Figure 1: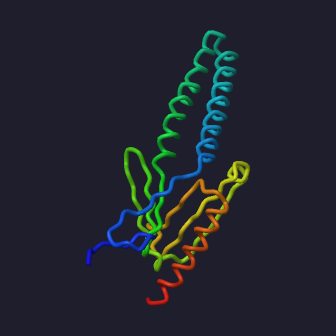
Figure 2: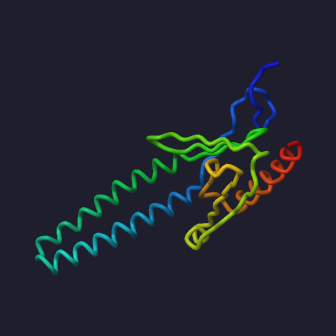
Figure 3: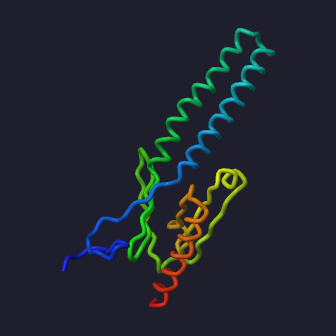
Length: 167
């Protein structure tokens, strides 16, 4: 028999099935970058234009350039997030420069929360947060469809109860 973990299909040694985040999370974050960049550009232009002189208002382009750069970074970050449910644990992978992969065993989960702030609700998104006994292994999956977040919460809670019964 081949060693290794089982994925959700139950096949030993099989690769996990990775799932990405909702495109609405990307749209939400891009809108937030635009709002912040435009606000900073307006404030910079007004302050410098009124305090120093109209020629200095050209520095209002600096926050807009930062917003354009931020737009690229947000897209790369969004694409880097993914998660996979396996037979014994949940994998969460994220990061562009510093790749981070978190493995949360189902039996170690103490609490699974689904949250959705006002901006997330406007975009039809929810966040799943997993709490374990060790604070360092708490994990979050942002930008999920609310129905998927509830399904994931229910599945993780069910698997957590089943796995922790043997401890």
